[in-house]
Image (cartoon, rainbow, N blue to C red; front, side, top):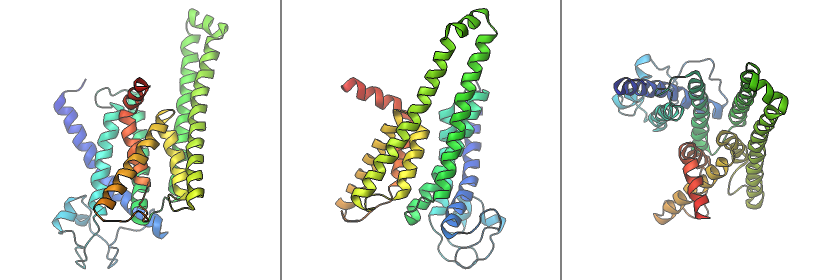
Length: 297
């Protein structure tokens, strides 16, 4: 195990890396909405279109030093810039914490860390687009679904192959293979994978039902695809808890706005961020919540 001081430094470095990537993710969220490419073209001010210099691209600090205004035209900048940078930095720390990469730097934890970073980057883009324009772009959510699906398939395949190789190099293991134990383990893995897929489709179907009965006023088509994605990310049965948490958080926020007369019961809110927040909470506390609920029964 690494010394506490070293782990702290690593967390700081991960946060800083996250803020830089967060700035790029905010750029992607903007250009996905406008149809611009984010592969080419330098960052520029949305108002005066002047190309930003390196001094304008330091996460959070540039925003603070410039007083929240464009260095060229002095137009007030959106708070989305520092917010997305800080958010991504925090999510990168969260990914490191969940994967325990700094406590136990094994190849498995490294893969878990990189996977979570990828998922959280997709989450950040979708959270930003939904918060800005009430849109969860298909190209983003479908790319995220493909990313998670490939990871799940490779992970389950690796587990099956690793188990077979472990058994095949041992006389007792060879007996277990012949006796059908390895086959039963393969079916168990396939069953777990199947439950994840089926529960994800069930969540998406439930959201589709809500969209149809509310005629799109309660949530949009993007939430259906996001629900499927969250089903894959959290896995069964924690994906059910993640969705439930998202509904609770969204309801509490809506009630807060209504009580303080910031909105009315007829107004809509971006629901995607609450679903994502529910998923993030469930990644850490999902098992605890599930066990607590089971003991209540």
